[in-house]
Structure formats: structure tokens, C-alpha cells
Image 1: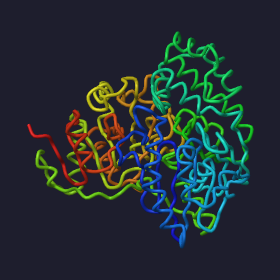
Image 2 (image 1 turned 60 degrees about the vertical axis):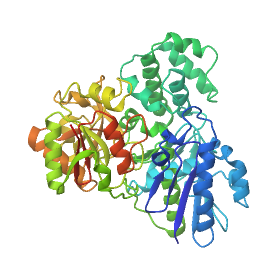
Image 3 (image 1 turned 90 degrees about the horizontal axis):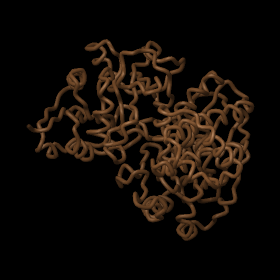
Image 4 (image 1 turned 30 degrees about the vertical axis):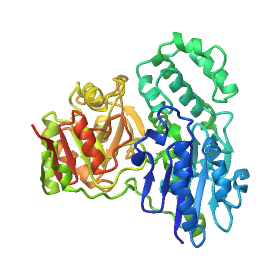
Length: 505
């Protein structure tokens, strides 16, 4: 039976049909598919529901499997539409006790928000058994769960409701709604602040997404980087204190928005032999987890998801009229791209289907030379147009990562932040001596592997600086979007499949 899955979230709306993973922000061009002026505007959620939930429910609910999950505010924003569409809304009372519990009627299949995170992490891991940590800001029945090796769900919503605080503090120190990733980057510049630590402890006594009395005044007088650093260290300590004693396996899978925290993921490698973090760990991966769960329970199948599950696009060369361009073999493209980067050029790199998740993994990337100590400032100021403290990732050939980074596990989805051992790559080394690495293998992405290999031949350095292909917008999805971002920024070169594109002089 065919499965269609969809996530009813407040943000990062997405669906998956077993082949294509549609992340709505890539098409609406609204970051997280939110109104940028009002993050609690219900209209983006309602429009997504009308355009994607309703017609696919009508299509799949009769002879196939229509599967979905909801978040707290996600369902609240569209509850009247849910009630109009579904004859049964008892799913709202479903509270699972085990990972593979589910609620099913004759016409739909439903699991909890945190089950979706946990199933996505576990069923993509390849592990026969594992602990699972699903940790984010707000789900539906839970805010955080731990799943032991038997599948039993342990509710950590009160003890470890830290995800909401990351979002709250990101807003209160001026880094915006859903700005937790920026806070993580800023943490590398800070130091411990005891008053901020006390404020965090006070918040965790009643984690309701509102800061305790006096917090506003404290944040105003505290350096932003110190707030960020203290929050990072408190998060790490809380996970050690609460999660470590629950260990039942040598493996752990992690998902939920907090699983984008590369410092935490690397820390977990000290306590677990294997740590698996899939590529779309936040709410943008909810449809993937829901699909995997339904396919496993109903069809007894572990679905093989790809990290590259966007749409295949074909370039219309008529769009290239205002550019200088040429079509070449891929081997020629790889060599010319590597040479351009070695010569100091910054390249937009667009290949095949887009990545699932918020990390560019070599199909929608901006590439540059990691040896250049000034490259971070160049890209942040002239291309990304974002805060200057934010670092960039090294994409390193998998067989060479331990020569440059102090870690013992590969990181194919750019999920861990690790110490840098070499002074040869200042362009990808953060102020605290770390880097969020992506290990690249030919099995996962042969084209990306090949262009890094060509750069290695030229320079002796087996990696490239890799960041997402965008400029104050969601990652580009289509060739048209890539050309627009190329035209409007200081990118030197655009590689679009087998086309090499330059701006006319």
C-alpha cells in the first residue's frame, strides 16, 4: 500500500510520499514558512493545510495510507480545518507508551510528534537496537522523550524542557524566532555567567516558554555571547545529568530541533559507542519520521530514505541568456570548479535533488577554500549577508577526517562540532578551535566527493568550505532560484549540474 505522510506544524511544513520530500519553505521562499513580520500568523499554516493536507487526505485515505502528526501550535492554528476535514479527531488524545504505538482509523494513521522524531532517527540508523533522545522546543503530548532499547517511552518534558528556552533566549538577545543555531555559533565567543546559569535553573522549575521575573534586565546587562555560552554549557550538563543515567544501549539516536546542536552530539560520543543524527532532525523532517513509522508498522519494512529527496529539476538554457556559460562533462566541471576555488573564487554549487534538512550536504552549497583566513568574512558580508560571528563547515573526504579533526566517528550529515587539529584550515575553524564537520564519501554523494578530490590534488587539503546556497532566504531549490541568488550576490561562479556559469563582464 502506498503511504503519504504530512506534518501539521507551526513552522517547517513538509510532506513525503516515499520519493519526494517537499519542504514548503523552499517553494514559498519564506524562512521556516513563517510570516517574517509575525511568527504567530496562522495563514502560512492554513494555506499549507488547504493546499497539501486536504487534497492528499482525499487522495490517499481510501485505498492507501494517509499518515500525519501534529505539533502543539501547529494543530491549534488549523483546528477548525482539521475538524472540517476529518470525521474523527480522537487522535488528539492519543498518548503513546512505546515507540511503535500508533492511532489508526479506517482512513488515517497518526503518531505523536516526538514519536515521529524518534522513529526517523532510529529507522535511518541501521542499528538493531538503540537508545533514542527526541528533544525539541514543543511537541504535542511531550516536549522531550527518551526511548530505551525496548522501545519504552520515558517522558522528560519537565526535567529536560530546554529546547523552548533556546528559542526564547534567541529572541530575547536579538537573534530572532527559531534562532537557536545563531546562539550556538555565538557561544564560542563567550564565557560562563553565574547569574545567567541561575536564571536558567529558575526557568526549568517552570518551563512555560516565559522567562522568570528579572530576566529581561539581566539579559540587557549581560554580554550576548556569555548568555549563549552559559546556555550551551547548561544544556550539556543537563543531558549528562538526566539522560546518561537512563542508558540501556551502546548506541544512541538523536532527533528534534536540539539535535542540531553539534556540541551536544559530539559530547554524546564520549558516553555512547555510536551516535546517529539524521539530516532533517528538526520539524522539517516530521513527514519523513511519520512515513517511516507507518511503513515499519503496517508493511514491516524499513524504508530507505535519501538525504537528497527534493525534486529533480531540469535547466531551461533560455534562462542563461544574460550570463556567459558552457556545458561540459562532469569530470571537466569538477576540475574547473576545484581550480577556481583554489584560485580564491567562491562558487555556487547546484546538483541534482536538494537535501532534506537545514544543512547543505553538497547539492545546494556555496563552496570556497578552507585555507583562506579571510573567507568567513568575505562570505558573511558579501554573499550570506549575515552576522559576522557565524562559522562555516568543512566538507572533508571521509578517509581523511581524523588527520584534521579530533573525533572518532564520521559525520556525514554535518551533525557534530569537533576540535580542529590543524592550523592549515583557518577558514573553517571557529573562534573556539572547533568545526562542524561533514565527512563526504563517494557512496553518499559521488559528485561532491569528486570535486573535493580534485581540490585535494591541487592543494593537498582534502576538504572544502561548505555552506548553504542562499542569501537571507531558504536554501535554493530550483535552477531559477540559484540563478537569482548568483546574480544578486558576489558569488564568482555558478555550477548548475554540468553547466558552468559566469556573470558577463
